[in-house]
Image (cartoon, rainbow, N blue to C red; front, top):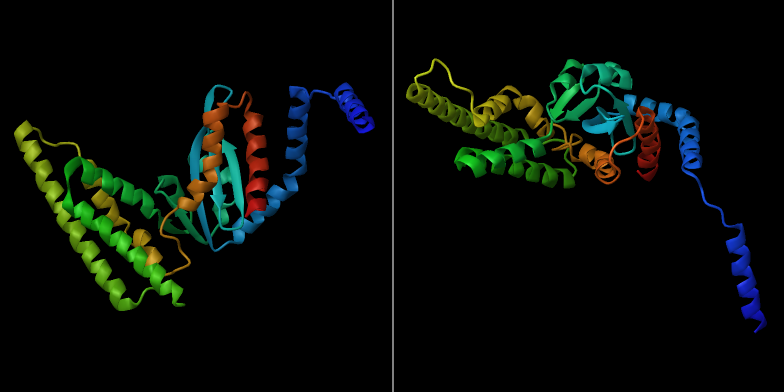
Length: 280
């Protein structure tokens, strides 16, 4: 009976001192945390500047009713987010790393990245999705064979890596490159013939390039950047790590919508940089 009375008194006391936290207080907490993490953000930026392999990506974020862009640069230990009004070179320069970064840069072929003097590697997961779209839309068997070749190449790389090798054996590497070249030349020739037929049927001087033609041409022109994962096993096959790190921002946008002010996005970027790096 006594213990029951004590517990009741305790619950009454707790309810009597319970206080609600206003939105302004939370906003002050966030602003203070953002200020305190300034040196941490600098440390993350310095670490990524010296990393050997880094992935980059960007996604749209809305603030003050306008479209902003959240950029991410990351490796296996560090993540840096940066919000900007632009998606291209201007925002990337302001991020403060890529201008002097000389390591391997993994990305999804956004042209602005090629303006930097890094060793470029293209995301093969993006290529596989694009090839799958061509297969589903056109039933293109050459695109299907290219998909299988890329997957098989990555399977070989993982196998050789498990036995301590640092790159794919030269004989196998050369064989894969020859098959890659032959498939793409056949695929490109087929698309050129199809476009010429369309041009004649429509009676035009020129017709729009097909999506398949543009993809096959890009795979030929950027062969080195696409297949670089075979010559160095420290280089990833895809840029999925960057997409995973940026997924939280997409989730926040889906649930919470936009930031009321642009500073809200900047606060989120710095705090999230700390949390993601700490988790790693």
